[in-house]
Amino acid sequence: MNQITVIGTGYVGLVTGASLADLGHQVVCLDVDTDKIQKLREGTIPFFEPGLEELVDGGLESGRLHFESSYSAALKGASYCFLALPTPSSDDDHCDLHFVLSAARHLASEMQQEMIIINKSTVPVGTAKLVAEAISEELEKRGITIPFEVVSNPEFLREGSAVRDFKEPKRILLGVESENAEKKMRELYAPFSDKIVVSDIASAELAKYAANAMLAIRLTMMNTFSGLCEKLGADIEAIRTVLGKDPRIGSQYLKAGVGFGGSCLPKDVRALKAICLDAGQNPGIFEEILKVNEEGQIAFFEKISEFFDGVESRTLAIWGLSFKPDTDDLREAPSLTLCRRLLDAGARLRVFDPASLEKAKAFFKKEDLIDFCDSEIEAATGSDAIVLMTEWKRFSYLDFASLGALMHSKILFDGRNQFINGAPLEAGFEYVPIGRPSKRQVAYS
Ligand code: NAD
Image (cartoon, rainbow, N blue to C red; front, side, top):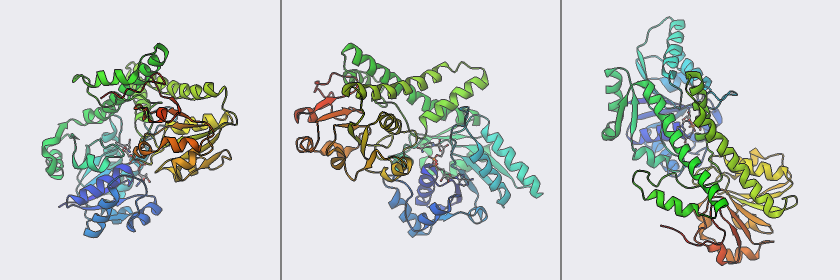
């Protein structure tokens, strides 16, 4: 059992902290958001993540999981401290490190004993060094010496399956530069010893960007082929199936869509572009990914607009807002840019999402032309068309025949190809998928 502090109680920090407590460690999760900390102490989870509530409840009940907003209280007795802080894009696309470095300084102003400081945030090469320098400066100001080491341990969890990803990791990457740090990190992750990959710190920091860039490239490639399929009369679902059966390629991250979003891929590709420019490496591939991603989102809007010959005064039901199913995360969700474009073009929107509706209300709070609905059926009622933006599983169980009877006209734009098996078509809908002919009903397997 170790005493661990996790600084930053967001998607990564809370899952990490609650999972480490579940493994038997004593964990304090710290956040500057006092409201969030108060709610967590009462067992209320500030965001939607399957399985997390049970994990937090278990931690609170066992007395191994605590929540704090004071650095001095949170750091008492800790020998490991995780940094799970935001690393958003700055105005010039660089990774903004101010949350990480300010937390590091704050940590140094309160730490009392020897510590391993573990960075989980996605950060450019050189950040561990900057964190170490910031901590040393603060300790010097205090006139004391406390031994510490900074380790890079990038996070690979996926929102929507984050709890399972912690419990069943594919790999745990440790960027370390001393035997002592490696030994201590191996102790901490002992239950997953066969998944540990050890590297130098620079490689660990860059590997996380490489992983996200690889995923973004796959999606960009598929989105490009999807556009090509529409122009040439081919079927992106057939192409996906063929590619997925090739073991050299693999079947993950091959689903074409209306552009990727989320809290990681867009900002990390932007950061990579800036990292390349700073390092004198050609950033072209990353610039192109960002361009294609934006063009794909515009193309989907234009497809809807052209279908109606302009969307002014049209009522559209938006199904799904989160950037993917099983999360309430709206950060850089393509749905938000689509809604913005549709509203600016004069459409009235009836939106529904099973998890992110409250966040969406805050996002669009000054809009008159948007109605927030309690169900996908309520959203579709009286609408001219449904626009599906997130493939929530519950949409698959709907009876399109009775749903169609509630609509002004039976049209479905399927931005995720959720209904390639043809259920809406069979119910008489005009069905508009992406990257394949409208009337195709083959669901490949
Ligand atoms: P988040 O925004 O959900 O959480 C960050 C938390 O840090 C917030 O609660 C915020 O209040 C808190 N915070 C900010 N400054 C603080 C400070 N000085 N002291 C204490 N708390 C502070 O962010 P996230 O999604 O958990 O991402 C964290 C990092 O992990 C980012 O670098 C991200 O790129 C990376 N990452 C995220 C995911 C993901 O799926 N969300 C996956 C892998 C990696």
